[in-house]
Image (tube, one colour):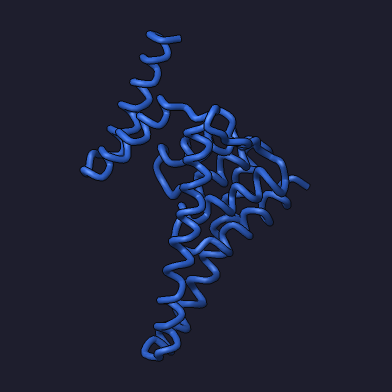
Length: 186
């Protein structure tokens, strides 16, 4: 039963996540944390970090890791297949329609209208992850649970990424620095 649930949950994620992997993050959070209670919020935040660090699309990595946690190899296959199936179906259908109707103003208008929705999905995911990363208790963020060390790391990492420092370097240096700080200031 879990295999079917994984396929359906990630099929929904794949079906409704326009704008790439980061736009899928709020949908993955909804399915894994809120609807099915497969992951805690902390596990979800860890999942996003791991999915972002590993090669490949973040949504597919997240679905594979979730499926593996819940159902082993078969769970990973079912969740991943669910995540990619809508894209394969939709891209095939859109390719046919695009080549037939690509010069219509309606087609151009629809594609233009999807851009703000995609940006909103990505911003929502970023806000959820930022709250989880910057507050000790992400389920009830308050000023007293704000983690200043995490904020400093966040600002440094964002600044480094804006200056085009390689993502792998930023992630590696951040992880090593956090480890050293934990050893020096337990």
